[in-house]
Length: 290
Image (cartoon, rainbow, N blue to C red):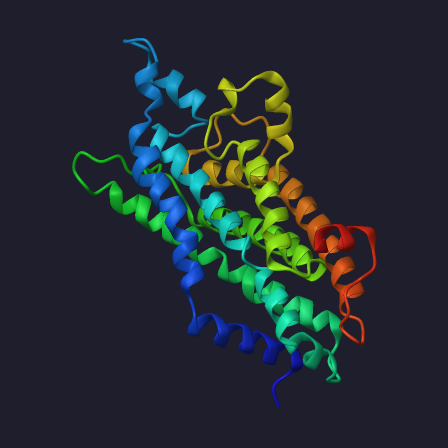
């Protein structure tokens, strides 16, 4: 007999495979950014004529050109955008009574949360790596900027890239799942996550180099979980020159954010997944629900 958690993961898979439109919608924004913003904006052209290439490489944290810098940032953008939809399934299950019926079975409440986190966290990696593949393909098109990777990339670097992307996906999937458990209406859910998404993305180094930002913003960027993940990804593809810390230091910081987000999600889920499946009466849950 299939374990309860495995059964719930299978259900998540069947629901996704029958309506994978959210993957397409999650891909549209980063791909449009790559095609339009990434191609239109070239930081190198803003520098005075005759500026050494090493100056641009320093500004772009080791990336050979702005598009390569930007493309790696879009990996994080795609992951966070895809994770935004994680909590919608929970809300629909509440509204349709599916969650209440699930909770009436002899299944661990934690399994309900962990199954959603496991499947949806892995699922958010799909658009992230499709963005990488698309950016690499653009490099083969004449006259179009594409992702250029350093020649010395090793298997360890690729694994480091994957670990950073995975931790980032799990962290934000857990964060948005926690809002899904707390919210009662889809409008309230998207109102909260939309307010959070843009500030988190725009206070990171996913799109703009840190060196051209004001000092106060650079301080925020340094602690942003997206910045920590993107630093590891760029170090894996372009080298470690210019970074004050080793990749494992950024990974530890990213892991600390992931633990915080997962702990928050577990707290809200444990309060929401009571025997009767009714929502928590905590202040945060009431604020999101309203």
